Image 1 (tube, helix red, strand yellow):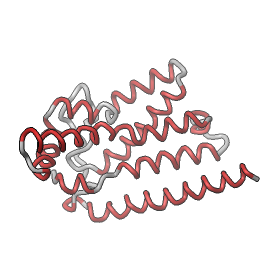
Image 2: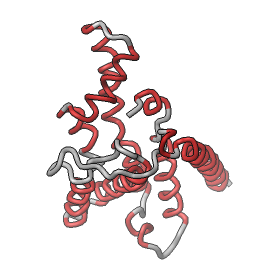
Image 3: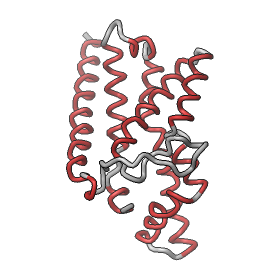
Image 4: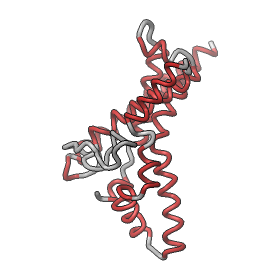
Length: 202
């Protein structure tokens, strides 16, 4: 895994924009299943949060490593990121747990079932938002995607022929698509928000 490409081309904004777009369409569309689940503002916000939450732990661990290893171990930032994304990401139990708990279809499927059985709409929206995040991640990670059987298996990943960041696996083709989704989707959401504000003020 190339830590430099990974750290420089984070796909998280695309997840947030995609979840926000789905939530927005659910608010505007009548008679579809997503409308029933995302029927109010809080549920839609939890769904959008589900697009962000799976990656938050990795950001926190990376920030902690960037402070700890240069200060305590005397590593350069380059050496720190190499250690983080070439070793700790794959082998350290803490990193594996933090990265995969909200990426695992097994965990999220269980969370979805619990939320549905207990009629916890916001928890259901959050779990479905995380599931959409994972569904987008798995096809665009060659060897660094979610552990899809976690916590029962701590090493099995889907080996996609496509990587959103790795030039050896179509990264140079996927990156512009990723950026376009973020920019165009973000522009649309901003336009839709401003339009709704104008209507509300009319």
